[in-house]
Length: 279
Image (cartoon, rainbow, N blue to C red; front, side):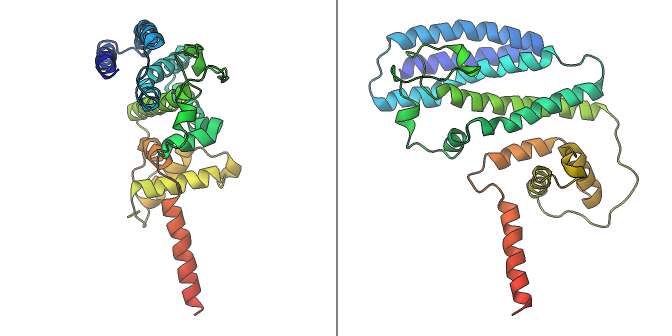
């Protein structure tokens, strides 16, 4: 297996990178990539139907560590094509709303299957034999990502769920970059007011605080967007908060639980110092 898969996935990654470099238009790039992926998937599935794994561990390794390298790209480019095909053509303001809406959908993605999402993100392996070994008797739930292939000989109950998580990560990065490009092309300046306070903590700490307040719906009756809140924090605390906040939030989501490291520290600090005042 190793010889075949090493050569297959190496060649696949090189060709995808070549397509990305040679085709800058996102729609053309997605179409070209999907055409190539479809051909390579057929090759992989043809091999997979004939190959007999040497052990359960080898099968788990293939479906957990290897297969997503191609299936995640398939899911990613399908979603990218959907987003770009209906993207507004002229208005940067409308484009920004379009990409931000798509990005918000990405952020909601973990809610679809919280248990498996936590399982994967935490690096767990106790259910690998259940999730990443084929079972011809087990039902595979019909979903968009499973449209790649329903044949139980080439997929397990969860390998495409894993590919969807990776694809969602890729889409988040893509959308963050598109949003940043639009913002950088606009000469939007903050009002001329100077705060006396400067944030001296880390950027990821202030991002954790901003998102917590956003999800708590603290501002404008819960209608304020992340970007609006970040802009106000930038002014209030003399810190540059551009669209890297989205990437910072991805880092926070990828942490082992608990996610609110900074907020937990604030709560503990408040409890300790409040108790000291009355001792």
